[in-house]
Amino acid sequence: MHPPSRQDYISISFAGQGSGSYNNSKQWRRQSCWRKWKQLSRLQRSLVLVFLFICGIASYPAVTEQLKGLTDGHPDTERPVLPEVVKQDQPPLPEPTPQRKLSNKRGPPVLENRQKKENALNTVVEDKASDSKKEGEEEEGVINWRGAVINTDPASEGTKNGENKEGSPANQKVQLSVESANWREAVQEAFRHAWKGYKDFAWGHDELRPLSKSYSEWFGLGLTLIDALDTMWILGLKEEFEEAKTWVAAELTFNKNVDVNLFESTIRILGGLLSTYHLTGDTLFLDKAKDIGSRLMPAFNTPSKIPYSDVNIGKGTAHPPRWTSDSTVAEVTSIQLEFRELTRLTQEPQYQAAVAEVMKQVHKLDGKLDGLVPMFINTNNGQFTHQGIYTLGARADSYYEYLLKQWIQGGKKENELLEDYLQAIEGVKKNLLQKSSPNGLTFVGELSHGQFSPKMDHLVCFLPGTLALGAHNGLPADHMDLAKQLMETCYQMYIQMETGLSPEIVHFNMHQGSTRDIEVKLADRHNLLRPETVESLFYLYRFTKDQKYRKWGWKILQNFNKYTKVSSGGYTSINNVRDPDYPSPRDKMESFFLGETLKYLYLLFSDDPNLISLDQYVFNTEAHPLPIWPSTK
Ligand code: DMJ
Image (cartoon, rainbow, N blue to C red):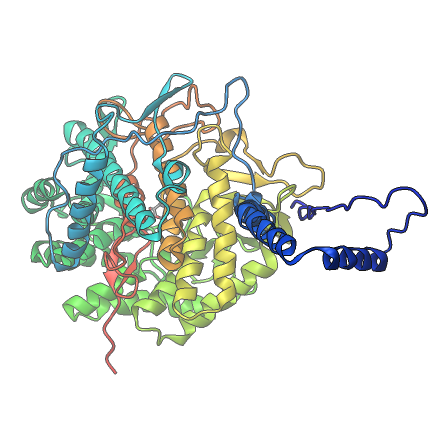
């Protein structure tokens, strides 16, 4: 913080009284002026008054300007907590200029009523945009930075270049709409690029390996294609959607002798099919959802009814991992939204009953710390194992997310879910929340047998969005305050890295005298194209309408384009977010990049809050929107 500016003042001096005793007392000056005034003729007095009046008019603008300068907030208060990393050995980036080209490609097709409104807005905005972009249309908005070709950032330009001249509220609104239309189009382009790679080299397989122009198989079920279905629908990519649908109809079969992970196939496949059914109304997707849902049910045949991690969907057998009889807590408690919805749609109670039993048991279990759960649960006796370690990251994360979201999905009636959620957030505040040094970033660390560790997974960045969603649904307002603080931290995890992309795990400094807040260990420097931060940006923007969240999302998208885009098609995870010269591509595009990351970015840039309204839908943990159940009251 800077001290408040010193108030400048104007001093006026009168001519002295010649020699003799100099008396400059206030009273003497008042009397002397009055005497002089009285000695003037009426004409002289009028002239003096007219002169003073003219002087007053002439100096008005300068004085008001000066006063304005004194009363305006200090510009520093607008800045994020930390400045962006200034790379050594390189000049600062030039101020970006508006160059991004608006392509002539068609806008999103009209898919359904909910989208019509958004599309109408897009069309108007694009027309306006293309008018104003005639000059420099060939340039794709590039500046050269360490040999990398990057897009410029209209986010900051709009205000810098145009604000003062064209800053009327109406103009600003148009400008923001143009920006958001450009950004949505950039997301569509990114999706098309990713899809091209998948289509050319991995069609019908689980994941694209964009550098080797091949694919990897996890379950052998076309994972990326299924995960991306509703994204294509939401982004208005009708052609791509139709070709994927043809594949689902003709090729997708679950009658395969293959082991799948219960959690991953529930959130990606069952969730993806259910949401696509809801968005399109096409029963093809519901039929496929029923098929995979019923094939996953053997996982619940365990002594404790806590499901096994793996199921063979062809043979109808299930088992835990080879080395343990434990399941992961987040996995067994983050399949509920999907199975509950399957019961609602099919009227077959077994799906909901199975996942409700898990929640009932976990609700009653010993071994929690102020509502925080351990990471493992045993499928034989139903007890927590490896107790004493508490994290909001891997293996526990979506337990907390699904407490809140099930409560919302069911119409906010299931009190045990709400109680567990509220207690857990209090547990986070009490045990895991700390501030970093020197800049006081709020972060969520981990606890291991009473010992605090300032380690935070990127996965934890789902939390700002979840907290904001809770506050939107009537939970305490301080949840929103915490959401904003954590959002800032998650953004700093990106912007403080040399590539502007977050590592998988960071450690925060807490010692006084630290020079930087965030440290990254060698083994944690990878980025898997994960969605959690842009997911939270989407929620924060929806609820606050603060443009900064969109600008942050735009920066992140630009950095994905700079460092992870593969020219022949697709995007790749990288090994080193700290080396912009060689981020070391990993040759894998995770399905959640299409299922989640690009979807949340598009929704972040959408001007239509009814495009997947958060009062009508709840997103599963793989970003597949499922309906909030209509009230039965
Ligand atoms: C996704 O599969 C889901 O978001 C899950 O909850 C966490 N891991 C990935 C994305 O990071």
